[in-house]
Image 1 (cartoon, rainbow, N blue to C red):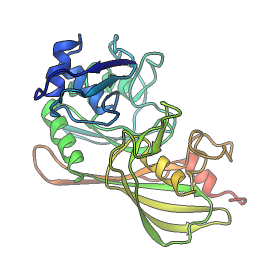
Image 2 (image 1 turned 60 degrees about the horizontal axis):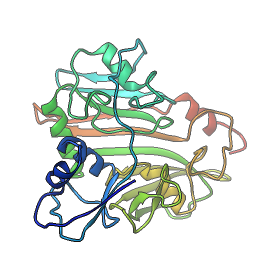
Image 3 (image 1 turned 30 degrees about the horizontal axis):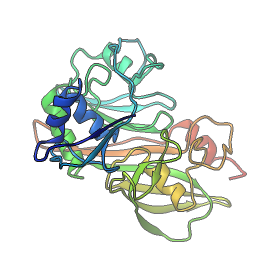
Length: 297
């Protein structure tokens, strides 16, 4: 971890760090979004203006030193035009490559099947506007050009994108519906995990509705108002009902079937060019329904 004490005021943090480190402003902005760079242990935007005495910490990060390569991996394409792709992501597929995991990802497959993808997020994440976890299944929107990418990302930031999930959680939820409004940030004890915390945290809001109660589990529908890393998994664990089969935030893996019981069922967004509302839905995958059909649920 690198620590920098600011000795001037009034300059944007991206410009300030670019002048005192070897990082580019683009890289700085990305690290700020990932909460790798903090100011006085808090998240800030690239437009934040530094103040004399601020303590800036830059956590350790991995450099993107390689380009993702095309790989002939089958994809379930729900929709495609000149600007947007909607993919129904399979269970176990990581969204983008990273050092140590360069192959078999959604990006590798996209590069093989499509000639044009947005470049906003660099060589390792072409086309990727948002992510879902490897063992979360369901719908993901992909941008074919930078205009579409920026348009969709802006709509996401304004909380105008519709994202509805289905999850099976441990235990019985007695309320018919509810809202979890609890900020999420890096777990101070384990930097690989997220947690509900008041440190380095961002607003996170999840709405849920109970669909069915089993003997020891509850099937719920969730609507995201924000899109924090692992948001649903962290929030459900926070209220004592972790996503079933979640290997990180759950109590333990209950069933042999691969994957946590979390599916991105619905996605809705404004088309970047036509400005028409686009709405897509997907069925629960077999790995999820196999668990729902068990007699010991």
